[in-house]
Image (cartoon, helix red, strand yellow):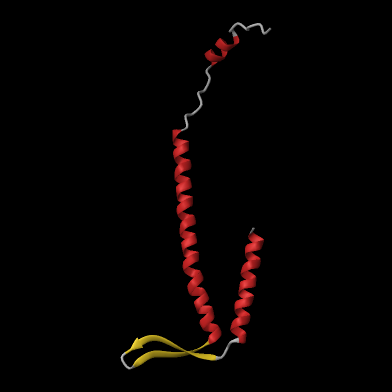
Length: 109
């Protein structure tokens, strides 16, 4: 499973890098409305696409990490609860062994 994930990330990086390299023309971006117009920036199209990709991936990655952390804590809590409620086995004493040894054996037919 780890190799599949690595291959997927490498392919994604190659595709994004190729897109950025092929689209290095400047594009106008209006960032923030102001009284006289917009805050205007000229950025390469590829950089805009890479930034949009990261803005989409990073929040989902953080949500997945948080969910995994929460579930691991819940699993650990449940495992500790099971350990706490499981009775410890009784330790046999020598008198119990002696009593078991002297019990009459039944004949099996």
